[in-house]
Image (tube, rainbow, N blue to C red; front, side, top):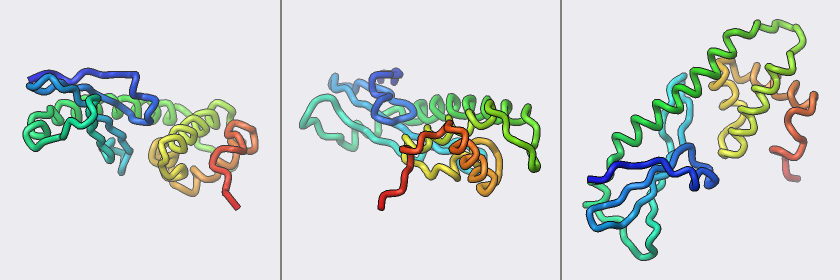
Length: 160
């Protein structure tokens, strides 16, 4: 059985990770995964499997042989490490309680916001879960980041 390998050329499709698997017949399969932080834990919530060869069906045998457990373990470990770095950084910051936000703090909010928006995730909830804050606080910080110009007006503009 072949091992999955990370393939960064597919990152532009919006997946958090893409692995490549070559089955016993020599056909290459791509497994794209998107993750989401749910209650402080990283979970896989979207998985897409596709072949480079047109007309090559995904059979039950191929699906059974895919090393999904390895892929899940590696992706969740990498995303958890990234989430932990974000949270550690946030713990070093002071609570605000009415004080002005620093640009550094709002830049983190803007970065998470942009990642959530590009990943088609609910932005306020994603910012809240990533930073470990209530949704109402995330909304206030998003507004503050917008006012400072850290989130462009074109992003997530309501269509009329």
